[in-house]
Length: 140
Image (cartoon, rainbow, N blue to C red; front, side):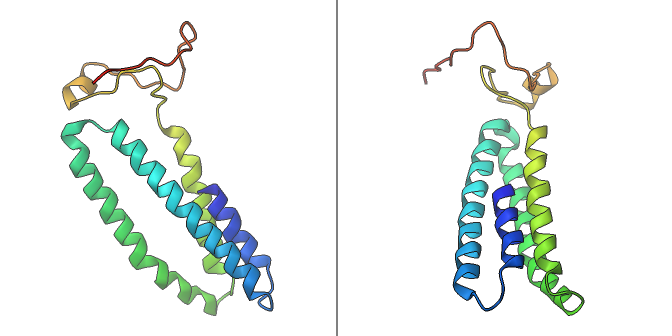
């Protein structure tokens, strides 16, 4: 998401006489956005317990729909300053990329399967175990 924010900020500084460069930057930003959304949905699928996964994905869908509804309305801010909507879009992308650091580290940890697992003390910490740096394989 931070790369998308950077491409949006770069689009602001490209003159309007260079529409090809602006189109390349916005297309690159859109592709990066698609890739980051795919990664975040995969992360959510792995991190959330099975019991609440459907509810959480419903909330994610509602938030995405809210963002899709509000985004065109932000374009009305161009009447005050032409780059203002793009700055808001870029800042929200960069802020979102920083929120990722709040997610717990799940490497070499068994993920919770239910809310009971979480209540019983599942600790997803940001610290990795130093004793065994190898990846453990789980057979299904």
